[in-house]
Image 1 (cartoon, rainbow, N blue to C red):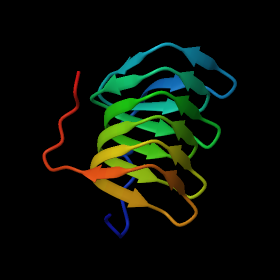
Image 2: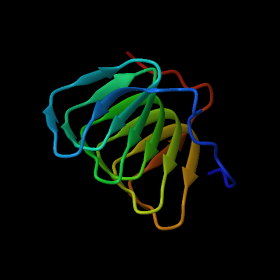
Image 3: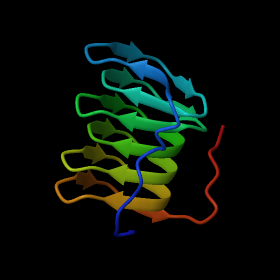
Image 4: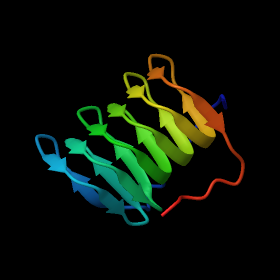
Length: 123
């Protein structure tokens, strides 16, 4: 676990995809490079090379395999990512396979964590 200040995604990066609050999406999602923000509910697996931001009102029930993940909301499923940030108030139930893990005070995590070097997103 790394301790210290972590930079948010660069402001120069724009949100490529938004699943807004109140939206329920059922099915698997492949995300592009860039940022995908989820403020609604996703039931299905998420894969891709980008950054996923799960907003405070967002939730995912399914496995996630992405380059980086920032969680303010809830996830129920296994996560594979180079970098994972669990923010204050987030709730994650599932196993983690990561190269970098940042956990803020007030985040809830229940599962096993495996740290790996040289992480690559699987297709």
